[in-house]
Length: 128
Image 1 (cartoon, helix red, strand yellow):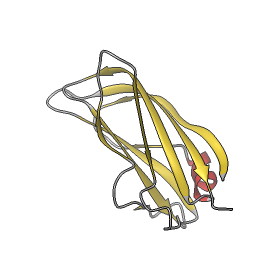
Image 2 (cartoon, rainbow, N blue to C red):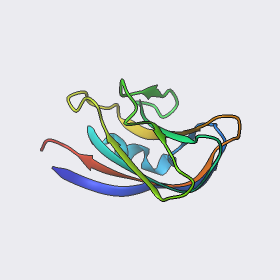
Image 3 (cartoon, one colour):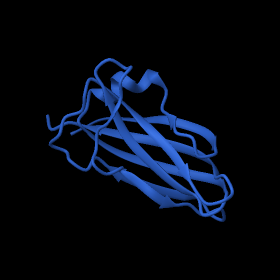
Image 4 (cartoon, rainbow, N blue to C red):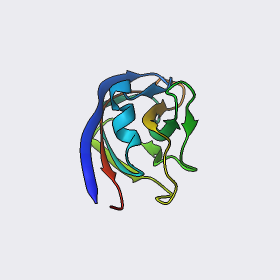
């Protein structure tokens, strides 16, 4: 059953360093064991840019672990000439998350650092 849909990230991202969703969403995202993630990328630049989004979990908000065996959005190619819409979901809906959850967001690319305006929304679900 769908519980919540939230826009958890809406920023311009430059380079290949990992960025994270705001800590204000950690407790909310940790409440649910299933997520569907939609990313909209515009103003894309760089050499063969890609987008990867991992789900990380923690019980103390200090020590974070990747919670899924495969990134829900895994090295999706982005185009500079169009609005890019990609999505993914938790790969193992029977594996519960830890108390807190966040998204780790990574742009990849070739010789020229990638950049993109990203808007990421999450729909959270539980069985009950």
